[in-house]
Length: 317
Ligand code: FAD
Image (cartoon, rainbow, N blue to C red):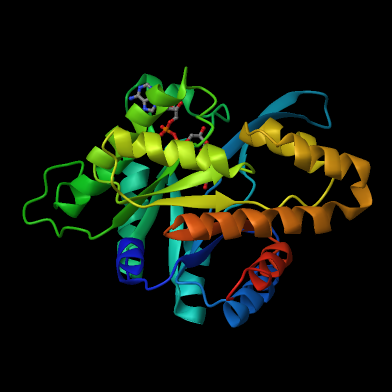
């Protein structure tokens, strides 16, 4: 089923999860061990799997020369999605990114997904890892997520990159990312929301937000989106703070604000960071559910336990 159909048919807010593929050479059974617990305890309607661009770095060789290496650290998104579909019968949502892909490669990936019976995609730009500039320069890559949304929706109309007579239309439901505290490159929130609206106008059917720890940022974001005429579901994405290091790493990598009360509590008792983070998230979830969110999307990466602890503590679950 498509993600938007899950939301349309839901009689209560949906709980979904996002995982990352193992590092190159890592064992997929570790992912299944985590997912077995998630599926047994929550049975989510869909599971997102992130995509990771190739990163380029320079490595010194034995003879002292330098070699530029381009390597994808976490390959396997499409394979993992197929495995989720077949092992659990749960709809996988692969993330597709612009970064590091030509439009032809994106089209090929979408054809693979279509043949596998995977009809959901989260269309994302990705962050600059050093491999995109040359692709963008000769116009063979999608620059922004909106360009990828357009490409997917064109394929849904049977419009592939080259003219193909009687091309079979695909049937993808497309989601996109939104930023309650604005995307770090955007000059202001309203500007960012106008760009978000372009993704919806291009065919995106729902929005998943970047993680946030202060619900008022989400409430303000939703209100502004509605005022701008964005009427698709806006699903809050949550991560649970579990270590003192998160006070610095989460703002650094995700450009978000950690509220004073939370940072002060964790700083005072760093050894209790996980309990504090779980309780904070439970309160966040309860308030979001009372507000009437369509669902909650947990970023669990490789460890589902904090999210499962949060879910157990939510009233009525
Ligand atoms: P876009 O929507 O393209 O926006 C990027 C910036 O460009 C914004 O500042 C926007 O305002 C601006 N912009 C948009 N359109 C235009 C335009 N036409 N002209 C000028 N400016 C414009 N990263 C990964 O590598 N893999 C993943 O799997 C992944 N999954 C994610 C899932 C979610 C829910 C979220 C919130 C983020 C995810 N990311 C992932 C991170 C994401 O790649 C970064 O946040 C990235 O910097 C922006 O991606 P986007 O799709 O929001 O970009």
